[in-house]
Image (cartoon, rainbow, N blue to C red; front, side, top):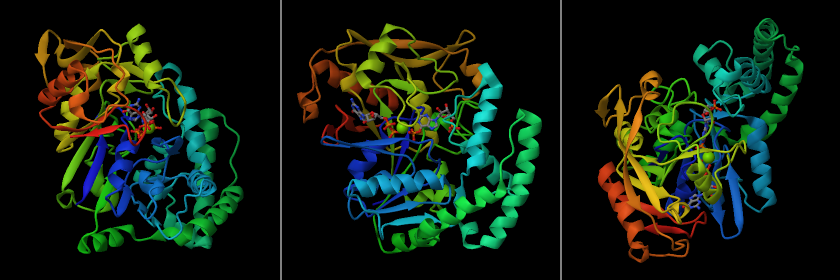
Length: 424
Ligand code: GDP
Ligand code: IMO
Ligand code: MG
């Protein structure tokens, strides 16, 4: 069976945990989009892993890990992730494959990300400064892009980098008065990356189609969240890739019809890092309560996450565009102790009620949430093993969300650990 896991909110929904659980029954886990802006956490007993570029299947021995064409790879970050895992006795030899067509995030992409964000001041996007936007922009622009395959041809790469650096230096100096970057230094680094990364580089599309013919079980691991999708999210406060499950096919060359099940991951409330509209945000003691209990600080940047109530309008939109079959709902335990829990079930925009999420930022920023209120629960639920043993109000909350989303909630997170997940 082939499954695709994507986030239904603005990222950090708990995809890493869900992928880790599903990877137990998968042969292959594929990252198909985004880059080191992602931070996917897997907690096994007392061990915590934060993965940025490697698929979360990496921590399951024997699972083949694929980084497909749609990912933008920061080689420095990937190599330190591989080394970090090796130190913890997680070996990837023979089970990591990287697409030759994936694009490389180089130092000047991260510099450009930083210079642009600094220059925008209060209008900044609040990116992770991982060079994601500049690298995807070079990919779309084509002429100044560097791919894994370029590492195979040192002479060609050298000439290309010289051309790129000429352009970037003029641009950085004119726009940001920045110091020049040096093509030779970048080339030398690339030579080192090549030595270590080329053994992993293959045609991942061919490999995945062979795996499909061989009836292997493939798990596609989305990064970011549907509301951060470049085309369908809250533009311009989005990432630079198709982070909804719509990006899966283009990101790895496997058509959506070959996926048996699309699983959407959401938190039992909503969080967002970075700028942009967030109708159900609670910038008040309730948001702080959720942040404290849920440890809502970024896995990649450490920034405090903005917190708010569950937004069924937003999640339903992600379900529609993502052809989501079932929902995994994480962090139910974080809501313990709240007297009342609210869910946004419609928006009021310019005096009119709507149940359809407007991805147009101008309209979305006018949206006022229409809430339904539920009674909370006080019992700690992190040791609960069965849905029926949850407090009645917690069960009612899940059932109500199923009704609002019109999809079954088949996994429920009651704690960060792999074992703290209820299956229904
Ligand atoms: P991802 O980017 O979607 O993989 O999510 P992150 O790893 O960035 O953020 C999710 C955070 O919530 C991580 O710290 C997880 O360990 C944690 N987490 C996941 N599921 C649960 C849950 O059900 N309860 C609690 N308390 N923490 C969870
Ligand atoms: P995972 O996979 C949460 C957000 C950034 C910023 C916007 C653009 O862990 O869920 P970028 O660096 O991509 O240009 O930043 O997108 N963002 C994420 N937020 N989780 C993520 O990944 C994110 N990846 C990017 O905070 O608002
Ligand atoms: Mg994350």
